[in-house]
Image (cartoon, rainbow, N blue to C red):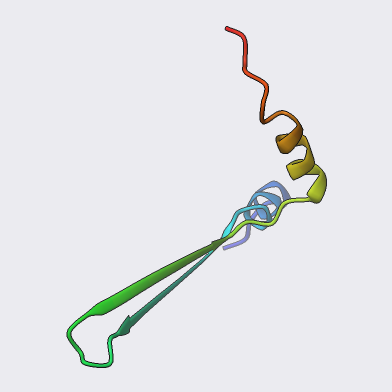
Length: 58
């Protein structure tokens, strides 16, 4: 299956989701760990932090 350039760009910008399932040493529990990695430019977070205190007027 081939993706369009637009779809490849969308996929590239999606967060990376990693999932790991393991059993405890005593075998009584299952541990499910999920890590979500989202990469954004520093300028994005600077803009978010600048606008954090502002409320949106309705």
